[in-house]
Image (cartoon, rainbow, N blue to C red; front, side, top):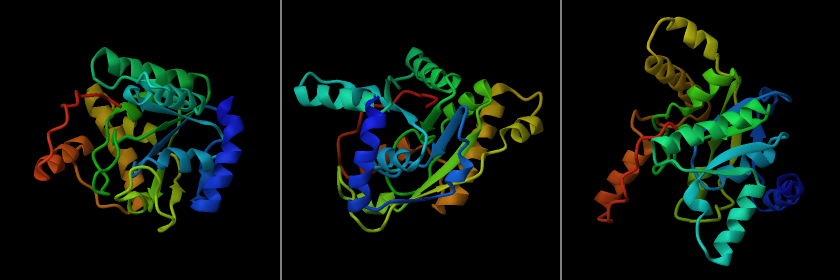
Amino acid sequence: MLYEIAKPFVMAVVRVLWNPTISGSEHIPEQGPVILASNHQAYSDTVFLPGQVRRSVHFLGKSDIFTGRSPLRRAAGAVMRGLHVMPVDRSGGNASRSAIEAGLAILERGEVLGIYPEGTRSPDGRLHRGKTGVARFALATGAPVVPVAMRGAFEAQRGRKYFPRRRPRIHAVVGPPVDVRAVVAERQGAEEAVVLRAVTAAVMDSIHALSGQERVDEYAITVKQRMRAEAGCPPAPPEPRSAV
């Protein structure tokens, strides 16, 4: 309910300050389950993308965003839930299954699931290896996967923790759905892991074609850890393998 009430007011402010734009939104079906698979360049992606989409978009958020006993953290957690960001534990094992189940529940209700296949924000502006959660959602529900590229967000956010600069202008490019059935048909009889990786690669190919980013076959979290080490920063806790 908060999402529907807040969205027009939030976007009115966003348009005055940043004036983000979107193209290709006609590729998003007006009804039924949909997976929006986007590159992830900045915190602002989770505002600028769904704010410009007519339908309500549900994102899965790391559970630590919602934790904390301070009034501010509690209020922030309540607002995030009201804005259709669902807390999930991405620490691996049973937690990963819970994240998948949360996403499946959204799609089974015929709603829109937003997902960042890279698993975390790009630390260097490049497009990184995708995790297979997007493929699992698509194969389990038959929901179309609509690729999205956020352009300009990395440059606008660089060096800033919260609010991006007004230039360059941030633009979302929505492409036609990925032909998941064709990918699966080409690998009939293959092991599940092979099919999941092939579908994920097809989704990342589509995002790459829309974004024009340099692409690397390496997980974003791995690059983040290496960059921290090169900068002499203490290593972050290792992130267990997760599908989303």
